[in-house]
Length: 138
Image (cartoon, rainbow, N blue to C red; front, top):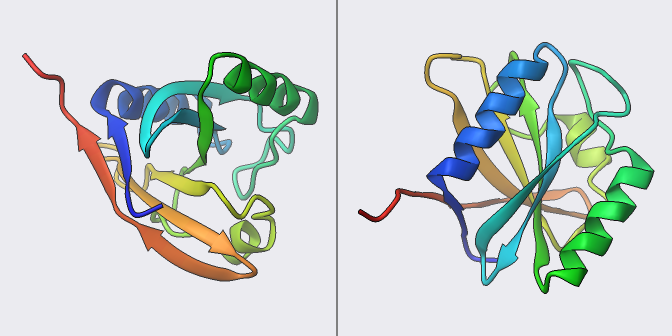
């Protein structure tokens, strides 16, 4: 994956979810085609923690099944950092078990200006993937 395109409305959905669930880390899955996100799946943080997240396994299974049924692919797993910058923590790196998807981080450190970054994480190696927020065409 060379870059990830996220429509502005989907970015806003992630931010809204992150703010609503703070101080717990919000999480979910982004699906689409050809590096462009088309659908957001809000999910439950099974750990209910402000320091880490774990996708609820049954929910994750249902989401993956739905993604396949509508002809999309999983592009990214996202979660929020309520108090820290949008960079993977050591815990994030250790628990990144899906090497072929991006890990998107939404930071609320500056709650007036939420920020987003994306990374590929494979075997403990972190590579940033540029994120483009797509504005609506008028």
